[in-house]
Amino acid sequence: MQKGSIRVQTENIFPIIKKFLYSDHDIFLRELISNAVDATQKLKTLSSIGEAKGELGELKIEVKLDIDNKTITISDRGLGMTADEVEKYINQVAFSGAEEFVNKYKGQNENNIIGKFGLGFYSAFMVSDKVEIFTKSFRDGAKPVRWECDGSPEYMLEETEKEQRGTDIVLHINEESKEFLDELRIESVLKRFCRFLPVPIFFIGKEIEEDPQPINNTQPAWVRKPSELTAEDYQNFYKELYPYNETPLFWIHLNVDYPFNLTGILYFPKIKQNYEIQKDKIQLYANQVFVTDEVKDIVPEFLMLLQGVIDSPDIPLNVSRSYLQGDPNVKKINNHITKKVADKLDEIFRNERTSFEEKWDSLGLFVKYGMMTDDKFLEKANKFHLFQSADGSKFYTLEEYRLAAETLQKNKEGKLVILYTTDPVQQDAYIKAAEAKGYIVVKLDTLIDASFINQMEPKWNDVHFNRVDSDITDNLIDKQENTEMVLNEDDQTKLKSLFSITPPGLQVTVELKGLSPEAPPVLATRPEFMRRMKDMAAMSGPMGSFYANMPDEVTLTVNGNHPIYQQVLATADAGRQEKMTRNLADLALLSQGLLKGTELTSFISRSVDLLKN
Ligand SMILES: Nc1ncnc2c1ncn2[C@@H]1O[C@H](COP(=O)(O)OP(=O)(O)OP(=O)(O)O)[C@@H](O)[C@H]1O
Image (cartoon, rainbow, N blue to C red; front, side, top):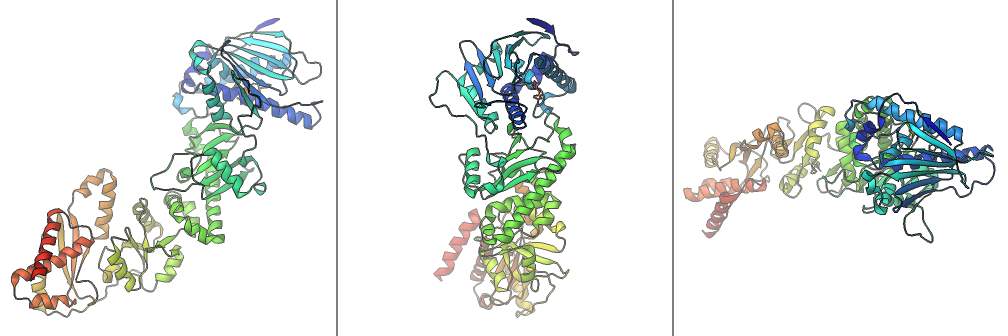
């Protein structure tokens, strides 16, 4: 038997490490199982090049929980270690690794450390009073050895009995960590970190199962070649990740080996409601070991709406978040993912336009969010971003809309005016009127659209958006055209005064115009700018309450050319005349949803009165 002392410079590394990893004690299993996987994979490699001779046997990893003896044992049939190797790798590498870790992070806020990689074997001491290693190297004639240590720099190393090649790590779980002496707890940790490890892992609890199944899928879809996979394989893998979700819209298989290594599958989920986001996040793996599902900074923000898996050994996981943002690899990965996603969308748009259009409801959100936040994406997305017509029957790219609408919908500055509706049912009358003039009205009715419009106007600098009810149809496209009025000056003055009404909470401006006789007698419109401000106010922000408290501005455009005014002006009964004009105004306000409460009640009783005589 040999006793020895491990040379470490930093005193008392253990309490420091423990503090760092306070919230994440369960990573000890991930670290030890990763080592077991590495040892197994290395053996396979040595065998394939003829350096390891003989039968490899069943290469599996076992995690055994012995509640009575308070131990957890992780056994592999990997390459094992000789006494010298234990001396070198465990006493020196593992301990100096832990020391390095501490030196790097001493004095930092522990929340800054993501991934918490790089601690390796030493993490066993987070949960153990004592750790034993029983190991037998694959090398001919190697003697099995037992190593024991309680986390202090003193260790013990001796020869032992061990039949099988490989390593057993025995953790004597300490009092504080007895929560791990629980089958369900261990199983849940294994499921979290080891689901997709490449070597079969078996959990052995109290009950001995007759036909034990590995807890992991060693060949998850993302490590397989895209050419080997069917749509069903991709969908099944998605189900494995998110069992309760509906089938995804489509997916992107990432596979990069230069200038960094990255594989993975990103899924576009079906989004039922605009705000249903961020529930099932993208998971980050390093060589099939689960690391985190906090992928902020690695995945472009707008793609956080996607789901799936990214696997890269090149992402520096043991560094702080602020470092990560500046890391050139992370930046490259970010750009690459954005490009891939844009290319894939473009490809689907070109090859399967109908199906792309069918999915636009869910897709639109990613695309618009991406266009607003990422200029590189915007450049590509301009080709496949779609406007849907108000009735939902047609889709236009910006260029297609331009081609179809250009002749009629250019304003005096030469800008293309995109007419949109936020509510095709409520704004139906305005849409019909605009369509009758040959205009194309598109639907921008989702939560994101208000900001989308505000941001796209400066980005698409020759485009202007106008909500279809923001002005009378004749003025929607500001062309500075004159209209003629059939009423004489006196009648015009009379009509204007009849319409000088002051409904509470509304600031009304009345305009008299000579529109087409078929246009409605009165149109209520809300200026585009004011309405946008009000919409934003509803969403919050410091300016919110300012705009929210302003009265609703509304313009009543009285169409002097409508035949009804001949009748109104000819009415001798002043009371009736007043009621008629007020009702015409109220009808217009009603179509804008601005007639409420007592105003609405008086409108109804007035209408009944008018019907009576
Ligand atoms: N189960 C095992 N079988 C064979 N060798 C092992 C085993 N576990 C650990 N080792 C050896 O001990 C060394 C130190 O392990 P440790 O986990 O501390 O660091 P690492 O695996 O090299 O790096 P990291 O875990 O930080 O990625 C390993 O490099 C390996 O040589």
